[in-house]
Length: 262
Image (cartoon, rainbow, N blue to C red; front, top):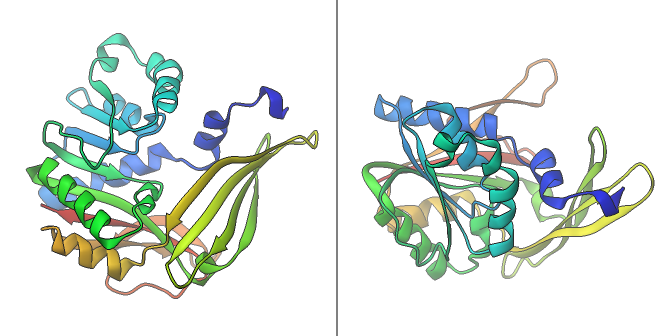
């Protein structure tokens, strides 16, 4: 089964939920600004799954996907953009370039999701990226990011999630408390005992929310807000609803969103 599997398809199934992400971005922008956003830039876009979701949902919406990986952009063209009608497809532009140097038309929304920005391991580099984003936003623009943490985030561990046709494994191989550097992998295991080991590997720095908020402020952003997930009273688990918050729970593992306005 592993020989027939496509790692990008597996990733989109196991990791991404672009419908939920779109709803959050679309609704949050409208709540803050009082009207809809139409222009989006998806940094570290990978297969451009979110860009496709963006243009599908509103006729005026346009999206620019930016990624440095030629092969993954080509995969997105072949497997995601091709599913769109020709009219909708024209409203997406994919650019192979570094997000640190890219110059695009100003967008109302810029996304840095799936924690990809954590490949910038120094404060200087992260601040440079945030400044680039700030310059690339319209005057009414908002920068959206996700972040993760909790005391399990610092633990060397493997977490298995059984899905319909395979098991998704998230591994935190190592963490260096002196530098904040961590190495993570994604593995996929199949019912026939075959495996895709280290289908994806990430060399990151695990940034904290206070650090990110401080650097965003230094880069010129205003109204930097953490959107914390609510709790289902029956299960005690996250309910998938994210609201602005100044107080988070000391959960063992959490994921949240940040918004930063220009």
